[in-house]
Amino acid sequence: MRKLWLVLLSISLLVIVAPEAEAQMNRKSIKKNNKRIASYRGRKSSFGKEKRYNSVGLSVNAVNYYGDLAPRPQRVSTDISFTRPGFGLSFIHRFGPRYSLKGEFMYATIKGSDVDSADPGDLDNGIFRYQRNLSFRNRIKELSVVAVFDLFENQSTYISRVRWTPYAFLGIAGFHHNPQAQAPATDLNGNPLAQAGQWIDLRPLGTEGQNATLLDTDVNAGNKPYKQVQVAIPFGIGARFRLNEVMDLWADIGFRYTFTDYLDDVSQNYVDLGVFGNDELAKAMSYRTNELGAPTNANTYLARDGQTYTVQAGYGSEFPDNLRGSKSDRDIYMVTSIRLSIILGATFHKAKFR
Image (cartoon, rainbow, N blue to C red; front, side, top):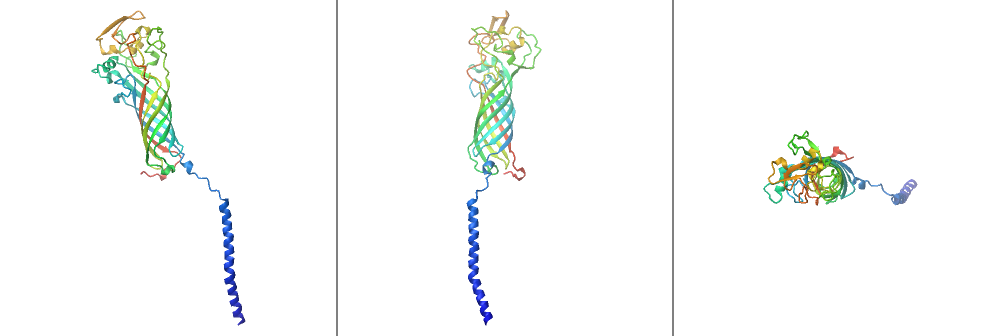
């Protein structure tokens, strides 16, 4: 009986003491956890950094020219048949949900020709441009930096960026250019030219009297050689499409507003052919109407070198109305681009086309 009483007493003590011990342990655990929570500062999130990433791109471009050798004098006149290819290599840094900075090197060619573009039946403007018979090509080497502004924000990381977004861009560019033209078969006297058919750099010839000593009364007085390194303002619009986790396709159309009127080597008036002295190539490249045949309205004059020249009236001689180009407008070229870009440092093997 005594043993039974001791067993019952032991069980009663366990029932009373065990809950109290458990409660004590729980209180200690809660205090410990509270201290941990109070002192926790959290890990530095890489989420913001993942929205700021770099990518490289390769573009194929179609390039068109607007200037004095366009089919018509309108600012947006161009000859689509003279569209020429260009290629670009770019580096893009994305700053956040909506903004990127793109640096790009582009190599491209622009081209124009009066006889191929102008309408000789247009008695207002086309006939003048056709009879002028100038032509050129110019190989452009451009380095640009533009800010790209997305319409749709990307608030997530590069992996879950938006499927597509329109964008606009604006920036600054520096470029090197070198207008050239093919030399005619003969000089103005009908003698064969040694350079016939060759592409000739036009700037060293000074086709509008840049290298000659002009009179103060000449229309082109003070005309100096133009610079081959120039500045342009690139601007335009486009759309970017997500191909997979690491690749984007860009399509945009942009313009380069330049601060030169000599992408085509044409800007001001004709000069007296005598200012070129004995440089028969410069004379032949400055005045090319004679290549179309005998003048229909001939003008014969005694030039400053003592020679007599017969030219089409309004072309090839010094006179305020004898326009070779229009110096009031600057030249422009348009670039239409398709660009494939790849995000750097991303895990490509997880990418799936969607």
